[in-house]
Length: 124
Image (tube, rainbow, N blue to C red; front, side, top):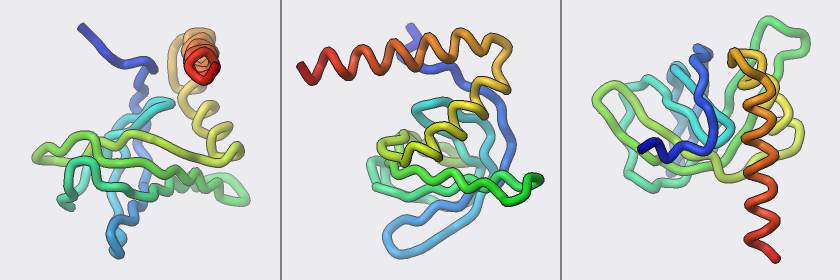
């Protein structure tokens, strides 16, 4: 059974992670609206809080997608992260990245709307 709420897309781009007073770089392998997997040699603790920055170069000015989250998975070649908090501009850029790189942009929008509905229902 697949517990993912959001579709994952392959998207290779450099990212920077700040955790516990240090910073390191890696290569994003894939991402979704709720997380990403980054190839790197660093080792963090499961559940450790991090600040992530994905730089989209090739556009002027560069786009910086910033997200706070935590470590959700650690494997030999990298780390999986869960996204917890971001600003509206970064959220919009993330939505565009995922929807433009997925074969069915409508499915991505349906997943986002469903997640928003679930959050609203849980808060009422």
